[in-house]
Image (cartoon, rainbow, N blue to C red):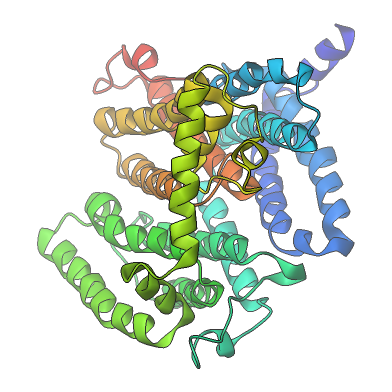
Length: 431
């Protein structure tokens, strides 16, 4: 108890105000380093321990000082882990502990990262970090132009630094596109767009990230980027551009660009060839994934309460693979309860962001809430098609950011206590 009192009393309000921007920068730096040079074996341990010792300890000081209510998403993820624990008496597979450790890490990241964003904000630097991650990984691919053009039937998929898998490379470069789009539409104090070096830098970074994504051959990530480009003007820019004719012009430019680029990609890239094979039902990978989903649904129906055990889909199905659909994976391995808790993670985050939009007319709050909702939709789609977001550290960070954005603007509204914000906001907005 004495130790906790020392931690809680360590920072006066004056020092807390100084600590918050430092913590925001430290977590952003840790996030960026983890998915750039942290992928190089010689630097991995340095980045991990640096992240554990500095940002985590300082965030714990801040948390103990404020003692904020934990996000509901943290309870839901912890609930999945607790629901799976009875299997420890029956399973000796290391995969069980790997999945359990990933869920525990997810809970910790959600608690710590959302604490910093809730009290510090600093959303812009997080999106700059995403852009840096996308550009770095795009420029660090194992193969370059030979993966983009050439003999499509013989060329393979690019990998990232230190043999980073193609799917992970696709996810990280997709993050760069998301970061660039978020920054491009960011509200400015003068209330209008300004063309300049910053815009050119963002567009260039997005183009480099797209290059890496196409080289990776990741279909799920590419579909997520297409969803960004469609949703960005309709969800985000409408809060930024009040002139409907200007918004329509931006949307038309994006549509014309997609109609021009997509046919070229289908004909001249390995990524496009993969989509063409799916269209003709000739892609073995896509067909096998459908089989895995069918097997997973049957396993879940046969074991509806506790499933077959966390991380045991590969052995229970006899395939040795992940289900390639995170919801089917959790349904098969944790039953109805586990997958329901996981769906509620998405729902709770979405509902909080939607309530901010409903109850807040401030442009910045509405813009960033819509950007977070756009990213959340893309995460949901990627989870349906391939990506195990609950096992991927980059997805854990992104979900923590989205939750933090909702909490930050919810807290901002409650503290301001303006006449336009109902007093019921605290009760209605999930904490």
